[in-house]
Length: 263
Image 1: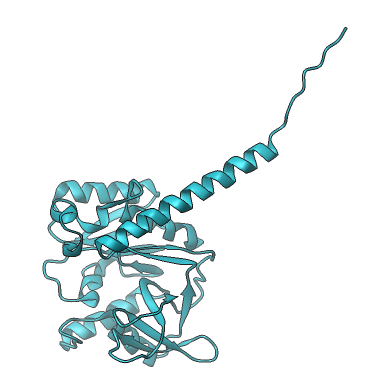
Image 2: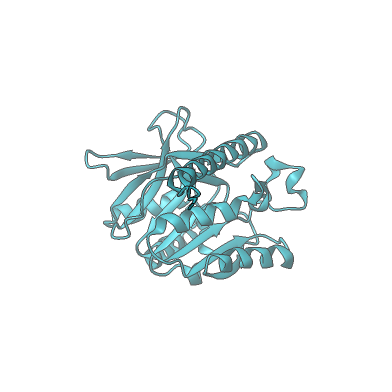
């Protein structure tokens, strides 16, 4: 299993914090966003992750070393690719073309999540979604009666669905994805001025790929300062609750030894 993390954006909506630090390395509850993201994905993969590939801009050697350390800390090879120009989500992923092989998870590094499932690697593809009130700023999906995705719509102007794509995707065949991304570039197929991943997904679907949805228990956006502050609060609350439960379990499971007097 490989994890592909596009993170080349400068994070203008998080300034001044991102003037010197790339957005995915901004800490949430004391740990960089991207580190939390790949740790959470590793937990639900259900199989070892052998490579984590990061697609970055010109962030410098210190940032690259930090990302490599994040991957190696999870027992995976760390690889860094560069996106010189922001041309859209499809273009960003294709910058890691050499790593788009076999089972892959693509995760954009401005989101965190909580989930209670293990990834079904037998599926053709899984798109992780969250039901939200206003999906107009996101890509959304429509489903059939069997919960298979029938349509992808990028930032709909009118209501199509309230199932927003949160930015995490599983592909059983990374090479197939790579071919469809390359097709968009070769044919200059753009939507709203950029090469969009959703167009490649639609092409894959039309060629027989069955995409299912993966629901998350909680989706935490880190795309702007207000959302990141809220995400920081929720992570701290979650970790506090987890620690309290662990402490209670330790107390309940402890063995109390009473002194024994012989006399």
